[in-house]
Image (cartoon, rainbow, N blue to C red; front, side, top):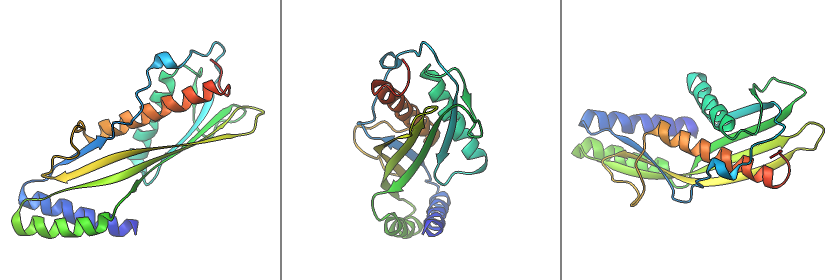
Length: 198
């Protein structure tokens, strides 16, 4: 299924490029939590943490870049003395699995838009995605704590304005904002529950 989607997406991009009208924009729903660092208390006794972060479907340089974004977002919370790799042992551990899943029939929409782009040289489509953020926090000597967050995002391909009232963003900027916001919410909620010092 995923390979079929990637093939059709490549066909759509090729159609847009051939028609001279290829663009791609990302949008984040207004419900994205805007958590300032003031809502996260500095940890008076910070300890190192092993961060195991995976973004579904990413590999190679993209996976490395996405993990660096997650590391930076976690460092900014000031909750830990150091962010270590997933191989680290005898330290607290934060595991995060992030996935983007289409919430509508993207395959059918792409197929129709490819035909329209090839025929008329103009096309545009918007598809919705549900962001899934699953984390597991394990403090040393304590049982793991699991949390799940969801958020909506939109991707626009071609000549379409996208959702009304939302700011168009390059894909990498949208990913950074999304990861930073969800990381801050995660740390804040774990602090409020007394799972992380602060």
